[in-house]
Amino acid sequence: MDKTSLFLIPSTIPLLAIFLILLYKWYNSATTTNKTPSPPSPSKLPIIGNFHQLGFHTHRSLYTLSQRHGPLMLLHFGRVPVLIVSSSEAAREIMKTHDLTFSDRPKSPSLEKLLYNYNDVVFAPYGEYWRQVKSICVLHLLSNKRVRSFRSVREEETTSMISHIEQSSSSSSSSVLNLSEMFVRLTNDVICRVALGRKYSGRDGERNFKQLLGEVGELVGTIDLGDYIPWLSWLSHVNGFKAKLDKVAKQLDDFIDGVIQEHMNYNSKSGDDEQKDFVDVLLWIQKGNLTGFPIDTVTIKALILDMFVGGTDTTYTVLEWAMTELLRHPRVLGKLQTEVRGIVGNGAHITEDDLVEMHYLKAVIKETLRLHPPAPLLVPRVSTQDVEISGYSIRAKTQVLINAWQIGRDPKLYDKPEEFEPERFLNSGIDYKGTDFQLIPFGAGRRVCPGIQFAIAVNEIALASIVYKFDWKMPGGASGEDLDTVESTGLTIHRKYPLEAVAIPHSC
Ligand code: HEM
Image 1 (cartoon, protein in one colour):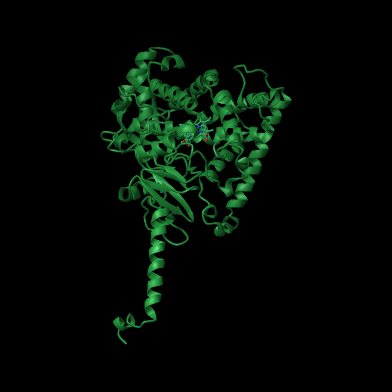
Image 2: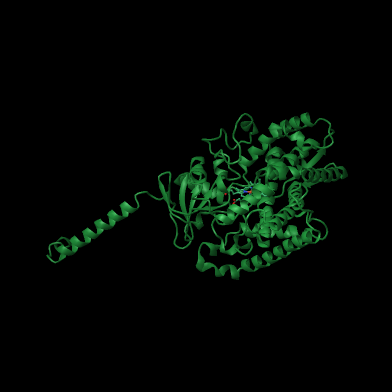
């Protein structure tokens, strides 16, 4: 029997009719319930989804993919749908127009223990608890008034960094300084004093606490496959990830416990005075039940952890990239030095009053944040309900990564985007506080970073001081223009190799 004769058999005709009706109904229902398409997706593999398309520098891999698939792409990390946002318009849709829908954070079962069961701010699910703890950050820990109150801490620690450079460079005119290490120490010491009341970089505490923080950062920046492909979660038990997490979580908890105990023993300062550190403030809020909801010790510990995880790496990274770009661009360094030296004159040390008029300094920091946002993909969000964005349908529980690194290099937004040219910000109203979506290193909307002022205050005084007091050159007579910009991996992107340079004291 040939193929055409099959259709002539009478009994096959009703079967064919039923099949066609069912097909028509299925097609109809599919197109009416899902009229809006999903965003374009690169082809994926079974089980792993699009994981194989991500290189070591996820922001760069996503940039390449988005060149082909557009500013809104839907990827799959294992079984988890992940929306990649790569334009300022789409970022505005997510963090402004539909901010409420995208105000949740994804859960990472592997990090739950380390993050005090999401009792912190950064990873707390969107809701009443998050609202309360965020308001503690905004009103009590990181308010303008509180940040100002730590001015002397910033000035003292910067002076101490400058003295260290002076000593090193007086011992030998060509001694090479590890600037990365110095910047880490500076930010760490400032945050320790502000949050815990004293430095933990002395003989007793240094090795443990700094090392511990490094390990926390590493763990938070590691992708645990089990979070995306649950049946592979056994892997973290075999490869030591889980054991390391448990160990670090326990050591960290013991450390913070010790600090809180120390504050209680020494009768924490009471009242909302200006001398209090973050632990004092939190214990005072707890004692007086000042937020209208009880905060327990776990909340206090989780908030203290946030200040370190959210504040240390990000803040020092800005200094590291700013100095990298200044060494690569002697013209910009010279112009900055002229501004700073012109304003400070022959003063011994820069004070924060001197910074107010330093517009070029502020532009250098903005330009650094544009080209090197410390967290290039910000902190992931997750959608709480189905929503339509730019004509695409996004399902509830879709993770969202916003590529701030790519947006900062968009040629539609910036002329010669790959060039380091702080002048572009001199007569421009563009700011990084979350209202201008072409510059969003701190995020935007409800979840915007509450530590902007804190971070900028440290960066401004430190950067102004080191260019004021010293001229800079590369070790071994190398040209600054050849300085590499190789990036590390992880959630916060700093230099892969430490920044080394030689300081030449300037007679101010
Ligand atoms: C240059 C330095 C910093 C950068 C680039 C940065 C960046 C970010 C980003 C991208 C977010 C997520 C925003 C979003 O989802 O829209 C964030 C959140 C946060 N940051 Fe920062 N940050 C910095 C410094 C700090 C400092 C110094 C602190 C505290 C001392 C801090 C505390 C936090 C907290 C608590 C959150 C969570 C906010 C929430 O989920 O509601 N950050 N930061």
